[in-house]
Image (cartoon, rainbow, N blue to C red; front, side):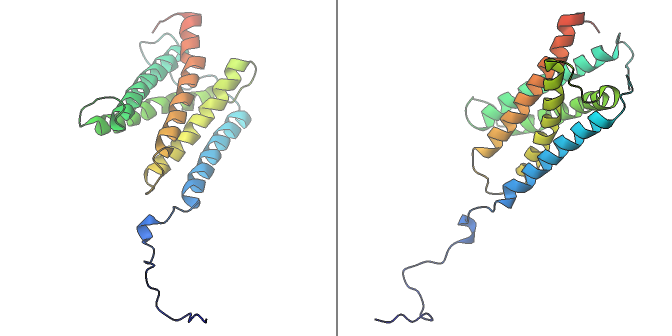
Length: 194
């Protein structure tokens, strides 16, 4: 029996392009960007000569108090984002506008966290003199890298259903530990003052 390679195939539908598996670059590019952001922040913080302070707001006793309160606002909005994500994925009951709440709480959390990170990098740098500070430095850099990856993945189509919750969970976990090793430590050490 011979097979004619030019004969039309019957019974085998041509593959639908919408069912193709996503290319590995769809995941590789966000991962590389995340790594690059984290490394660049860490290297800058390590080689930069710390300036001691960058800002202070009227009404606060110290820069540490400003940073601690801003970080607390950021973690508060991150908790709202976490809960709204559970609503979006049907794990908690919630309003139809939970996706809007999720987006805006994330934006506000990020915008409030940026001045804190700028101060940490510029005024204090990447430090490792005790375990708390080492974890704070590592996870602060990781947070901004993972956040960058999450933002890039949001624009990707056909992601596995587990990917965004996992990356979002990593971002939330990193921000939580950053807050625990900075703001909570500050409040426990110096008191809850403004």
